[in-house]
Length: 451
Image 1 (tube, rainbow, N blue to C red):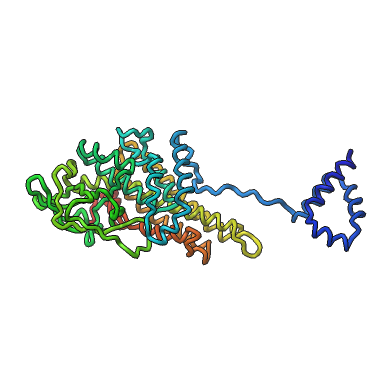
Image 2: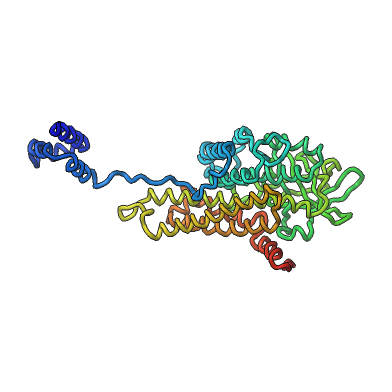
C-alpha cells in the first residue's frame, strides 16, 4: 500500500513537470532510475520534492482589498447593507468602465440616468416620500460608494439629491414639494443649485450680486451664477438672490423655459470634468411668486441647506480617498520590481499604512457626523470640521497613491490621476478650508475672525 501511495504521488509529480522540459531532461539523465528512486520516497519526502520543484511555495493567498478597515459598513442594518452593496455593484458595472472616457471628453453619460433612477436612492432621508431607509448614515455611505468609483458621478447625484431636493424639502411650500420632489426623486426632472457667483464665492453671506425685484406677483431677477453643476441640462435651477427691498437672500425655482435665462458651459476644467458646470446668466428673468421658495427668507435658511450637504461632501472626500487607496494597493500587489511585488517593500508599505490610517480616521469621523445628523444635533461647526479634515487628508492620500504608482500614477487608465484631480475640487467646494476653519474657530474660541 505504501508503494502504491508513493507511486501515485510520483505520478502526480510527473504531471507537474512540463512535457517539453521532460523530453529535454530525458536526454541528460536516466528517468527510469529516477522514477525507481522517487518510488522509494515516503509522503513527507515526496511532498518536499514537489515543493522544491514548484519553486519552494504555492502562490500566496493575499487578503481582500477593502478600505473599510474598521468594518463601519457592517454596522448597518441588513437592509441598509444590502442597499450599499447594490449601489457598489452598480458603480462597478455601469460607471467604472466608462468613468475615464467621459471624464477625458468632459461629457456626461446621459444614458445612465434611467439606470440610476431604478436604484431609487434619491432623497432617502426625506420623510414622507416612501423612503424606508431614512438615515443620514445610509446617505453618507452611498455617497462614499459613488465617489469611490467616480467623484464626478457622486457630485451629480449630490446636487440632485442633496442641494436641490434638500432646498425644496426644507424651504419649499407643500405645493412645491408635491410638484417637484417626486419628479426629482425619480430623475424624471434634473435640478441645479445656483449660489456661487463669478465675483462672490466664500463671501455669499455678505451679499449677492444676483438681485431680485418684486413687481406684483412676479419677481424680476438679474445677475450671474458660476460653477453651477448640472446647469446645462437642468429642468429647474434654484437661484439664490438678494431682495432689493429688504436686502435679504431669497430662493427661486427658475424653470429651464423661463425667458431671460441663459446657460454657458464652463470648459477646460482640470477636475470633475464629467460634471457639466455652467455660468447661469439671468437678464430680466421673470419668476412667478408661486415659484419662490416660500420658507427661504434669509441667508440663515440657505445655510441650513449647506449644513446638511456639507456633511455629504465630507463623505465624498472619504470615497475619493478610498478609491485612490484601493487602486494603489491593488497596483502595488501586481507591479513587480527586482523580481518582487513592490507591495513587499518597506517604504511602499509605509505609504499604504499612512494612507489607510488617514482613511480610517476620516471614516470614523464622518460616521459620527452622520449620527449627529440623525439625532438632529448637527451644528455648522460639526460639518465644517469634517469638511476641513477630510478634504485635507484626501489630498494627502491621493498624493501618496500617485507616488507609489510611480510614472503610471499620472496616467488616466490607472484611475488614480482622476482621483488626484477631483480631490482638488472637493478641497474647494461647499466652503474652502479657510472659511470652514473660521467657522470652527469661532465655535471653540467664542470670537469671530471673519472680516
